Image (cartoon, rainbow, N blue to C red; front, side, top):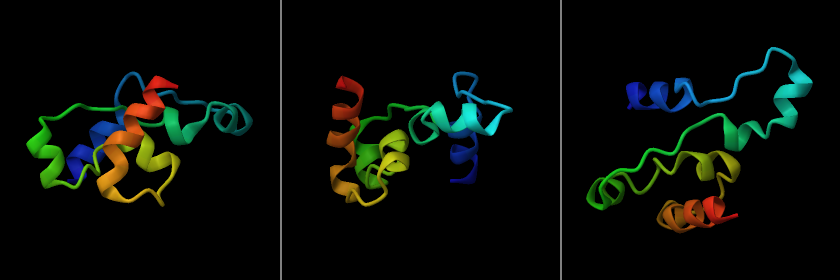
Length: 76
């Protein structure tokens, strides 16, 4: 799990900023991770916790709603 977290947060598409104000403006809760698509069975086994961007944006969303919330985020 630690390795998966590492990959989520260090992918080349993850935005990094030296300046704290630029970091805050970049919506780090959404931009500081990548969305990796897994087979549905894998998502179910992990309770969709790998819907990482949505999990970062709102940790109050129940795990069983993360997949639908991630899709809605991507549509927006």
